[in-house]
Length: 136
Image (tube, rainbow, N blue to C red):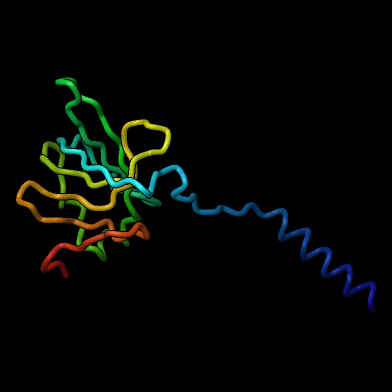
């Protein structure tokens, strides 16, 4: 009887270890000790899971540079009042971001400041997320 129990436990462990696990990535690539504002124009918004991405064209020394910013998941953004059409290509925005540690253009979105001054929070686990006033 003990051999059957041990065999069953070993088989269960073997099966469990054979299944791949998909861990969520960390925010370790971002410098959470820094918050930087980037003013620019929305190039595009990828409203996709697991994370929404926004590409913003920023002028640096009179040359356009495309910055890529990672946002929270769609459900999290919606809870914070950010909908698919909150920002559109061509919109002038300020991205308040935690930059990449390696210096590449972009980072993680803390919140956005729209042209009219409205702040739109990411609602993710990064401190400082705000919500849109009057959002449902």
